Image 1: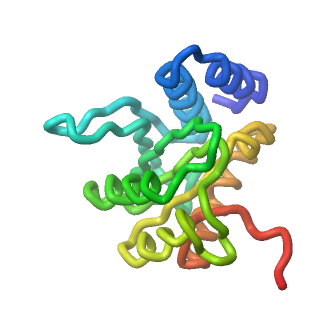
Image 2 (image 1 turned 30 degrees about the vertical axis):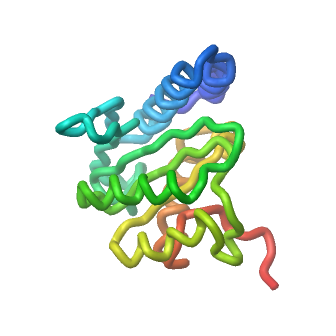
Length: 183
């Protein structure tokens, strides 16, 4: 399946138009499933509840690591979706890292509509958690609504995700956009 920007816009519209936070979140999760099933070989499952009902996984992705897909990333990914009006806080990022650790999952993607709290240069607030995650063998990649809106094709998506994963490894922190300038 090819990524269609019109379909992406429709999912984003549905998320924005949701009358409850639950409806908005479900639309954002549906967007995540659509995006990752556009990547060659990937398949996605959503809304999985852990044993004892203690944790809910928004989206799980199986990645066969095809050359035209997410060849750099591990075979299993967990995606957390936060269609919040504000940046996602460190408590929520930390909880997501623990969900990944509890399942021995090496990589997770946080789709945070408005990013995360703190300053990536100063490694403050949520950005600080990337260092301890990498030390535990976990890479967390951050994607925003603005970045998703800018995707024109599947190749754009795979490049974005592969580059974020590489940045997480190289920086020893979160997989975030490259800084626009270096001092």
